[in-house]
Length: 232
Image 1 (cartoon, rainbow, N blue to C red):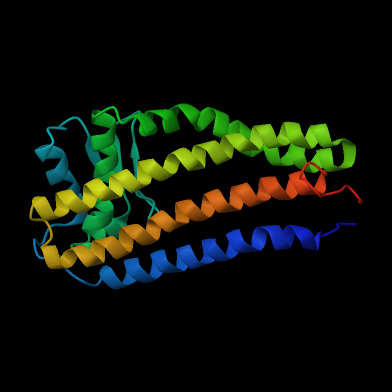
Image 2 (image 1 turned 90 degrees about the vertical axis):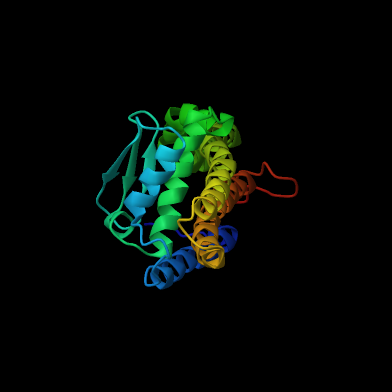
């Protein structure tokens, strides 16, 4: 028989609500500004390519990928992959997202330390995500130190997410500045880009909060937090 611990919901509820709110903001702002054309008339793909060319990054390929808002930059292959909604659209939202991903390519070219560190942490974070939660859950039935071992593994996920914050914030900062400086958007269109990229940034904050609260829950249940106990 499965047992649901209501304390788990109490710990996770703030992160869940923040995640839902952030996701709603992304959907709402992207949807709205996807219907607002940018003054330059460039598509997301053209905007990204223009920013890359201006920076002298001629070895980065702008490609089309499948999936809604699946836009990303791969530093290993130097591929800037844009979703159909971003690649083809000539909206404020499209050039904002495309410029953000181009910002990652600029980070890569400039040897931006947090981007390098995040890439180096990918294998560790994957291991922590795969095993950490399982070890923490099993540890509740075995011994607090097993929970602690799981926390150490799962903390790799938290570290990866924390390092992701400056990477994403910096890419957005670069995107906002370059879009205006290059004339891709007019200064009065900056607000729309801000709304789209700032909403996306909150999803990364929500991920950090959710992971941290998950760790605190297992520490609490294992009696490893001050004032907590293992009554179950």
